Length: 305
Image (tube, rainbow, N blue to C red):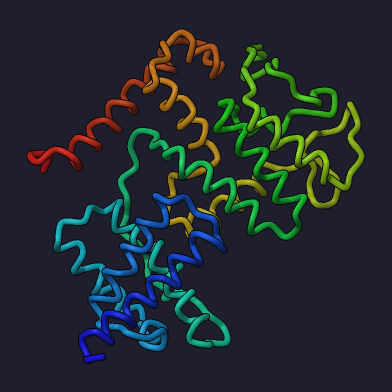
């Protein structure tokens, strides 16, 4: 085998290992795996790396230089932030493969991302977020609990406070759930089978007895689960997934609304599902949906730039 062929084979081995880790060990969606492998490939080519040791030695200055080059190629602030998060995970993986005792990603602050309209996550990202939180939980039942909560937000459009206000009397969940939201306004929301299954999986594993007057979702010591615990788990998971800081539990509710609107739901129905007191609160999602469409146009249309 000549030198060029050996280099190509070594590059392919690095990317294959990263691909297998994401697809099988981390069980990421095909879309996420493709994006993460492409991000890693660009770094490998920029460094001319052909072994894990070379990648493991990359310091913050080297990573900053690589990202600066990507920005010069036209990468947006938001995409740069996502690429940085993806590379952090890849470099930790590289350090592990190189045998480093205490793998740690290079410390590098990401670019500031302008906050604007609520930015929804994609369906794949929503599911990946819930699954990643579950996989990285300290105990299996805690992972099942957090996944169930997040699927209630994305699959039923609940506020996190509404999900955590459920008690034993609400179990078992049926096809519909009656909630009391802000201003004591009641509404009825449909519960998808995948959401019911996730909650059932949590209930089956929960070590605490289910009491009609006690919270359905329990903390590690048996008390009512606090929103901050779920928010902290999501904040940790989104780093590994390369999602922006805007990917919060509340963003899953925004995504529920945006995806329904994009699929043809009318504003009045959406208002009822979300529990908004006025239609004006719901109309923001027409702007969100337009922003998503514009983003697709800019990336797909040959004149989009």
